[in-house]
Length: 88
Image (tube, rainbow, N blue to C red; front, top):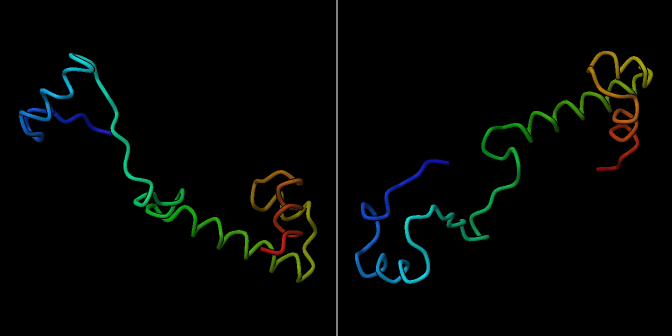
């Protein structure tokens, strides 16, 4: 997150109104909820995990054990169990 000087982007009237409530402090103005994106949607992290999980499920179906998959993917056995036994 970067900081932007209010006087560079806001009208003087709005700055005067904000100064009635706070002066000389840093405030955070959140995005509207309608513009939120799920975690990893931009970076591709979500897609990468979905692809990894699909590969783990496929390998399990082909006979790899949970312990082998945990070693192959550097994940805990419990995490592999959650992946292979979930219907998502």
